[in-house]
Amino acid sequence: EANYLKLIFRYSENKEKEKAFETAKKLLDLNPKSQLVHLALYKFYLDDNRPEKAIESMKIVLSSTKIKPESKIKVLADFVKFVSKNEAYEGELVAITSKLTETETTGKTFVEIAQYYLVKQDKVKALDYYEKALKIEPNNFGILRNILLLHIDLGNDEKAEKLSDTSLERYPSQPILYLINGVALNNLNRYKDAVESLETGLDYIIDSIKTEIDFYKQLSKAHTALNNLEKAKAFNEKVKK
Image (tube, rainbow, N blue to C red; front, side, top):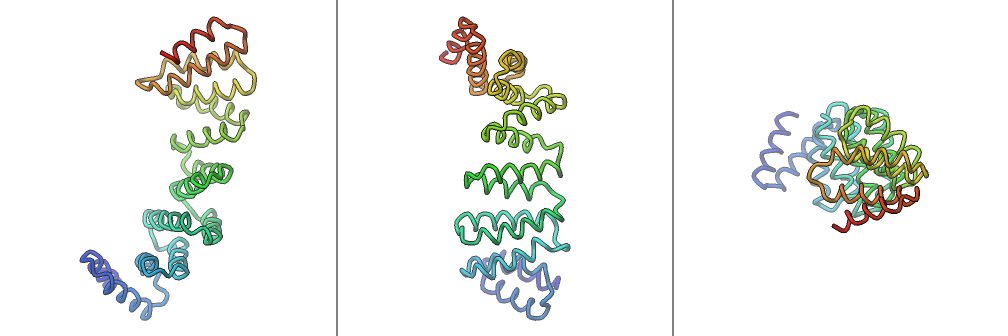
């Protein structure tokens, strides 16, 4: 098997796709239980416009215990990319990702799926997969930020407020957390708390005009609700400036 795989790799490197494909098929004939060969086969099947065979190979790769997580992530990324252009096969993606939930040990897999659903504007499913990713990688700030932003987008203000508040204990110098916290508090009509959070967060902004503008808009909103009209006007002026 190892020699066949090396030969497939060499042919592919030399742009001899037909020879590589034929070698892969020969290996499969000789060793039908080979899982590693499907790392090559799925790409050949996609290029050969045989989507059913490609998906069959991708499923074998993604459910294999012999294939490294890094390789699986590349295959999953191709799977997601293929399904985004061929939505008729979305059921296949859902089926394999449901199985992955039981065995997966890396958050990157779920991030790939979350991003697929984001492109489709299905934010509820995207949030679900980001939360799965965070369980595996609890220290991944990028995943945490995306979860918080989705909570705001979906109107889950209480969840956004609580999660951003507890996250600030771990990341006290991240301005985005203060901003999300302030947005959630404004939406919950807790304007005094919003002002406090937003004013604290302002001190941590470094060279980001857009973030600064977002803070000023939220501060203006909070002060307007508190009837501090002069302060609200002052923050509006800062936005214009």
